[in-house]
Image 1 (tube, helix red, strand yellow):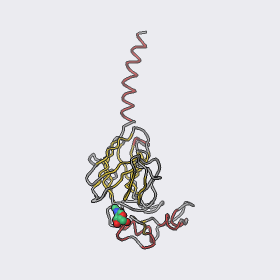
Image 2 (cartoon, protein in one colour; image 1 turned 135 degrees about the vertical axis):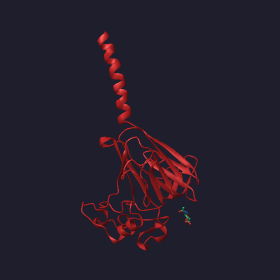
Image 3 (tube, rainbow, N blue to C red; image 1 turned 60 degrees about the horizontal axis):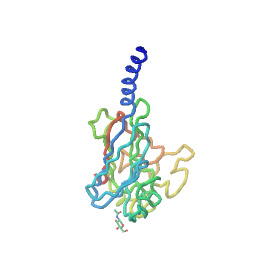
Image 4 (cartoon, rainbow, N blue to C red; image 1 turned 90 degrees about the vertical axis):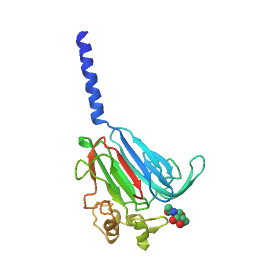
Length: 229
Ligand SMILES: *[C@@H]1O[C@H](CO)[C@@H](O)[C@H](O)[C@H]1NC(C)=O
């Protein structure tokens, strides 16, 4: 009997230590610094209207979460949270349960992966609608654990064939060919991907982007996403 009690005394703190070491939750502060309203979205996570200067705090559950955050523009929703947005619309719901419709600038992340590391990036593979910054809130611990941003005027400079209401499409969305979508696995940069790459070198411009665009921080880091940084 005494032995069992002693064992449980040992097991409990060990389990507690494991829980705190490998299962950090993460906090994401999503702030709108645009001069217009942005309807923030997260999948998983839902969505929220953000007037200029407002912040939405998302608590992401501990574990190996993969998710994306994006902003929607020119939305209108009724009292039950149904409606639509000009960009980034997720099936007409205020609280998203699906990914958004391109074009939308994406902040993507995978938390608590191998060796308890977080991986994150900005992707223009679904095009661009709002400039954004994606940063760890803690001090950088390495060269790869730093803030990234894509804040160029891509909407204003968008190539004619990629233009969309409220945004700028990726070539894959418009032309749907292997060359741009990389469905068969092999593809290289194009005039279109270079258009995005020169303006936002930190971001993915096409699926097989050869540059290092994934950033890495220790698990348990918290982050902020800022629209119009
Ligand atoms: C919303 O739509 C109007 C009319 O099409 C457009 O002028 C405006 O730029 C849009 N706003 C945003 C933030 O995209």
